[in-house]
Amino acid sequence: MQCFNMANDLAVLVTWGAFLVDGNHLTNLMSIGQKSTETGANPPAPAIVGGLDTHGVFEGDASTTRGDFYFGDNYSFNETLFEVFLNKSASYGGGKYNASAAAEVRWARIQDSLTRNPNFTFTTPRYFTAYAESVFPYRFFVDGRDSSTALNLTVARGFFQDNHFPTDFYRRSGSFGLLDVGIDIFGLEAAHPISPGYNVGAGNYIVDSADPGFSEGLCYLYTKHANVTVPSLYPNPTGALRTALKQNLATFYGAVETINSCTQVFPYGQ
Image 1: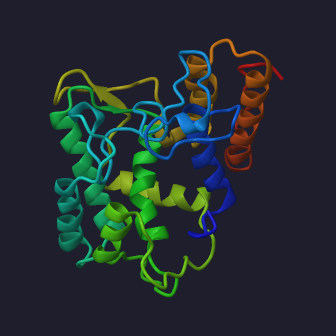
Image 2: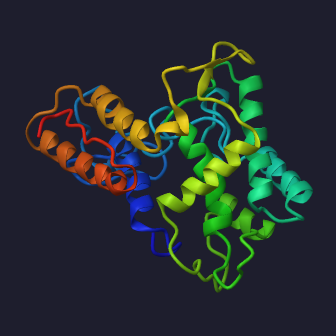
């Protein structure tokens, strides 16, 4: 959060959104990769506690530099996909990754998954996080002394492939939060509009009429995550686990309450 100058509301939404479904609520530990015994004893099934690369609860299809789960590896750096990133940046960003390049990279990744992945799913929350992950590189990975919001491609490779900051990196000047990222993701989606949906067979994309996408702000994302996804993993928690879930859901709600005035839900009671 602080190393990127990410505002608290955005940091809480991202962190607790992932932790609720991928972390261990009793130890407050979460693997940033695959499932690990180091996060503590597993809660009762169907809870996963599988780490960030667990498909379908936070991680999703059409990632910028990682393949879809359907193809067998959704966590390793994918050079072929990064070549798309480089080529679109050359064609639309003047040799750097900026908002114009981001719109084209995002669209290319959506189209590739839609065409090749018979199980492609692009519904909330992935509908939101896919666009957000396209915004983050030019908002957070650009040195704070550079006001261009255009990411050097060598620096981009360092972040995406090697997971490290460049030498003498300065974080962005001024914090960047939910209202800011909202403006950017709306702009990326407007360049190539597509409604939330999913494939029934490769290339056969079905619009999900029940998913409002961006039209309800963050409220549908919050409500679906808190009232549907989390209870599907923890249908009948008791004792300390139930208490921890209620506390973590309350923290998650705190990220959206001042932005969209969403109605708080209580799947485990107040």
